[in-house]
Amino acid sequence: MKRLLFLLFFTFAIAASASDFKSGYLCYKILSEKDSTCEVTYNGKDYYHDPYTVDSVVVPMYVKTDKGTYRVVRIGNYAFNDATIRSITLPYSLKEIGEWAFCSCLALPEVMIPEGTVTISDNAFYGCAGLQEVVIPQSVTSIGVSAFQGCSMLETVKIPLGVTIIEDGLFGDCASLKTVLLHNKVKIIGTGSFAGCIKLKSISLPESITSIEDGAFYHCEALQKVSVPSKVKMISNEMFYGCKSLSEIIMPQGIDTIGDKAFGYCQSLTRVRLPESIVRIGCYAFAYCENLVDVPLPAGIRIIDDGAFGNCEALLQAIHPNGVDVIGDFAYSGCTQLKSTRLPESVETIGTAAFDKCPALVNVISMTEKPKAITRHTFSNYAKATLHVPFNCKKKYLLGKYWKDFAKIVEDAR
Image (cartoon, rainbow, N blue to C red; front, side, top):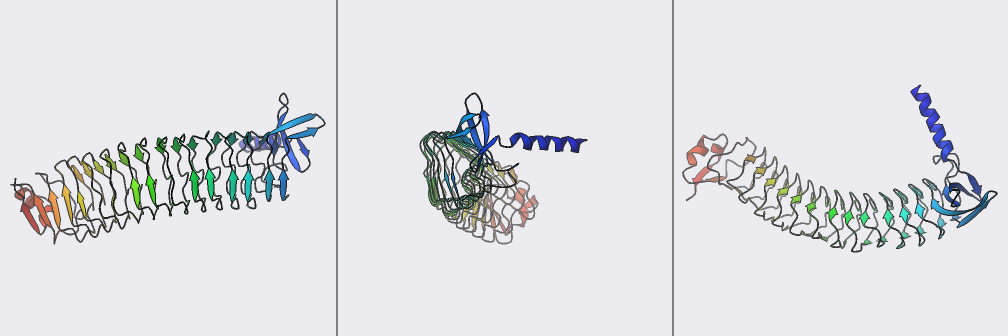
């Protein structure tokens, strides 16, 4: 019975979405009899079959039928899905380009969106792999999620003044994108909005931006320098993950968190200056930044999360200020050049394998009078390292499991 109801619903949905009339080679659906408006819709009974196969399309402003004249105000959802068109002329009566309207129009090289258009909907040009140029007029106030994702030949984009949100995945996988012009009213850079833009070397982020979401610049492999706007309070998860050319990042005061994997595999980073407002460095935040030599930790930091600096092979020291509560599992594992670390009096947790595979670690300075619980693999260089402990605390460490395995334990002066 459920299957029958589903089939009846599906059949009704197709029938309801079929075109109302055809004029020339285009199909249309009436939007409003009262306003005499219509949209271009897909060819055939549904968008999975019979895509438009003409090379050149001219969408008129008005179409005449035996019922009257209708103004074309919309390119409907899926209207040209998988079409083979090579050129499209859109009318000045247009107000909206619907969802998936030009999805996978692989042969379409350029689109001139007319002034007066207000909305470019979700996935409108998704997968238009041959699209090299698009002109977006100032009348546009909304560009939907993934609207230009996968437009791998697109090189330049200028965002109109009315658009304040760069939606999720908007230019994701635009592999040829080199230039993005953002105006000073943009407030949000969405999740994965520029992910996979492997030729994007620079981007100027206006001070109006208040939030940059997860993975916004994921695998922007050519990106070299970024200055984060002052209103942004968090470096989000995977924001710059895989940006292997990123050599300079400027972060403002006020940022309190470096998100998980935020700078993972940023292989050109050598030094990072964290703002004093930072409280947490997330899981694997700087993992595999293999040329990172120096990251001074600010006084207010509380948490160095799991794998935060894992496999940062060039990192020389890890001096934790007093106030750090947690040094997570594998926090510095694989830091093969790490020579010294300071464990503050405030530390409560030193994670499993936190300093594992650190063969150059020869000085461990513990400021806690009572040794914290560690495991056999918390440190890997017990046999060669010197442990520095507070005055009159050596006996406590000699009784502490695994602490006693250090080659030498030295009481520092008061």
